[in-house]
Structure formats: C-alpha cells, structure tokens
Length: 227
Image (cartoon, rainbow, N blue to C red; front, side, top):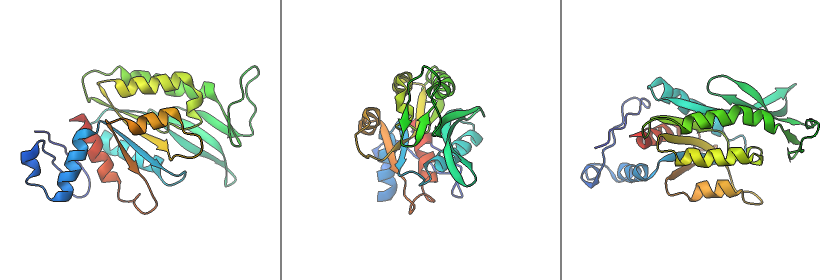
C-alpha cells in the first residue's frame, strides 16, 4: 500500500493503493486516487500570467520542506520602470541568467532567435538549464528526485540540446518532472504535444478561478508519483 503525506490543508492526506482501499473512499477521493496511480510526471498549463510559475515555486518549497530532493529552474519576468523587458532563467540553487530581452541584439555570428519582441539568449539558457537536467536525469533510485522545468515553451524549444535533455529526463526512472507547458496556440509545438499525450503525465489546467486551490492537488500528485 502506498502512503502519501501532504503537509498542507490542515492535516496529512493518506492515499492507499488498490481497489480495496478505494472502497473506503468517497467517489471524488476514489477518482483522485485512480488518477494519481496512473501519473508519474506533473505539468501545469494555462495562459501567460495566470500563475503557473507561482504555483511551481510554492509546490517546490513545500516539497523541499518535507525532505524531497528538488532541482530545476523557473522563468521570471524582468521589469524596468513598470515595463516587462524580458525573462530570466533562475535555478532552484539560485543561479540566474537572461533567457530573453526586448529588442536586444544577438551575439555577433549567432543566429537571431526571436519570439515576438523578445530576442532569446540561447547560450545563457543552455548554460543554466542543461546541467540541471543532466543532474536530475542521473539521480539514483526510482522516484528519488523532483525536477522542475518551467517552462517548455517557444523560447526554450529553440534549443535542440534542451529538447533532448527533456526527453531523457522524462525517461529517467529516478526522476519525477514538475513542469509547465503553454496552452495550444497557433502552430503546435512538437515536444509540448508529445508531453500532453504521454500516458504517464498528469496535466493541471490553471485558471484565475482555480489557481488559489490547486496547490494541494499538485503537491499530492507529485508525492504520489514518488511513492
């Protein structure tokens, strides 16, 4: 029997495995238990600015405070004078570097990678993100480490080494991925659609209406994946 402890919402939540245990659960809890048994990786999706990164960071803090090894990176807005000028990549160990900037020029001799008004600094991104994913994918036993990947979007997917590293991390038996992917818009992103269709991925859709209530479910799902 699996035992999953969720150190939030006022008490511990215990999930057992098997149909016998589900008989003792109300219908909603039984359905939740069934979903958790199928999921290994957890992803959040939703429109820009809805709160995906905030949820990822809060979930990471809760997991770390309960003794779960967590590594990875998230993206953070860069603002000047109240105006967004770009995004930084920030690792959970505290390293930071530019992901993109408004109207910045690419390095001499380098290809110009752009998403809208933002120029992507692919070298900076890869220097920070790739070592984190390599470290997560080389962890020991099953379910020992959580790897945060925020996000897998257009900017990040200019990097072929990143695409390869994400696939390797998802296939690593010692890693549970907690990540974010964008909502479908325009031309499909191959890796994003691949992740959506994986049978071992649970996707939470984040909205303004539910974002303040999803954290316990996200943490519970990650904890269950590690059990």
